[in-house]
Length: 87
Image (tube, rainbow, N blue to C red; front, side, top):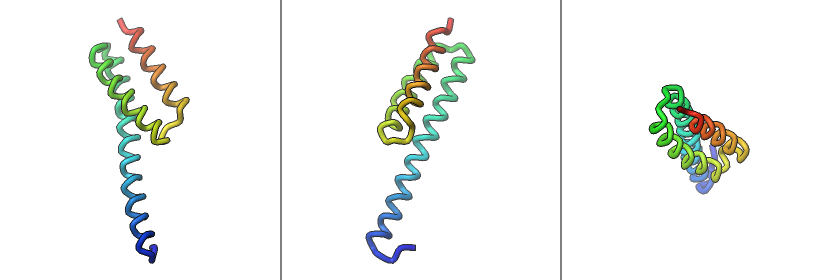
């Protein structure tokens, strides 16, 4: 445990940022699963809505450095291709 006042504050700030980052990563993972579920249900309209939310959140995670650029591009490309190939 830190003794210096600024170090004590830094510990609190780091803990808060870590929680926020975990929430964002979990949200991205859940949106990917939701999009896959809508694709499997062959519901193109809902899949597009979930995909647009996913794009916003995954780009935010990329900007924060939580997810690598190639991973973001790959996930977006795969899901977009699946949505386009839906009948």
